[in-house]
Length: 418
Image 1 (cartoon, rainbow, N blue to C red):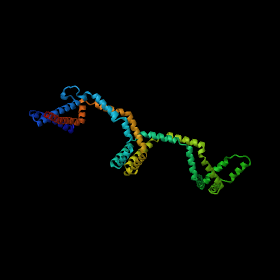
Image 2: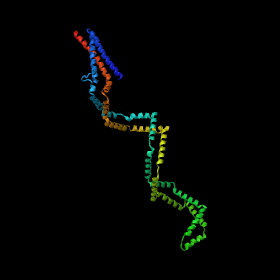
Image 3: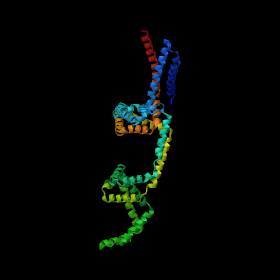
Image 4: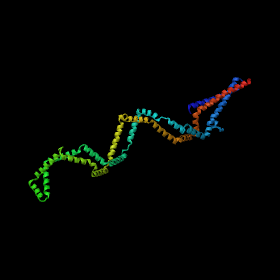
């Protein structure tokens, strides 16, 4: 029980004791007007104090423990009282309409944004936010997401249109003048090979072997035999070597028509790569075989773990909060400000829906909590809640009775004099 209630009870008790003591003390000394007035005042004050004590006590319990009718009003009418309280709470004090109307006038974003803006600058908020981000990164199970990532990578690679890739390759080759570079490279290699001494001997050996195997008729056969008798492998090799070198040197000349024709041919072949059906089919087959045999899980898992660790290290850096996170949060808050009306309306709508669906729970919760209390506890709570005012009713009854007693006694004495 609170000290205020105890104090008010003492005052009420003392007022009743004073009235009773005054009544007893003035009883033997009646006969004079002042004492008769005091006696009448104390008598009326005693009656008024006792009456108010009875009325206040009868609200909560039986006075003096006697089962007097129409006393202990609250315990005897507990169900009706709690039902009335719950009904008043649900339908009057906390009605759906009153709550919803109040919610409609709350500027949620206007109240929250300054608080969030201030909290962003606090060291505690920064530490908590960094810790939360690190926990979120750490909660990522790399082993579980690796198969999913690998599957998605394979699916993406298998869906690549190789004709587009070949088109890009051919375009890049032409941009880099690969046709000229490829021809020059081949001619340079041919020139280097033809410039070697053993090349002449090899060409002569191969040529003589070819001539010996040729079977012709008539004069052509005679001419071939004559060449074989006039030339040996060395001479024939030198002739072919010089001839091929001459061809290579001519093709290396930028103004040579044959070179331009050859480059044009190479360019057309490069341009037609993406339209070469056999090449496309071969590349697609190669791609499927490669993806079937490819097992990237270990590589992907290692890469993801490395990325996860690098992300954790990055978050721990001192400049992360000020350079990246704080500007992003301010940007989000600015967007919220710009759309505050719609956001407030959305929040209000959600709260309205929530109240609509769960408003009955308010009364149910109050009812459940009241039902958990026994009569003594409930009465004690109510008496503590309004007890101070009730005790002052007793004081007022005694004081008012005393004053009224004085007035009535004085009136009686005045009438006797008249």
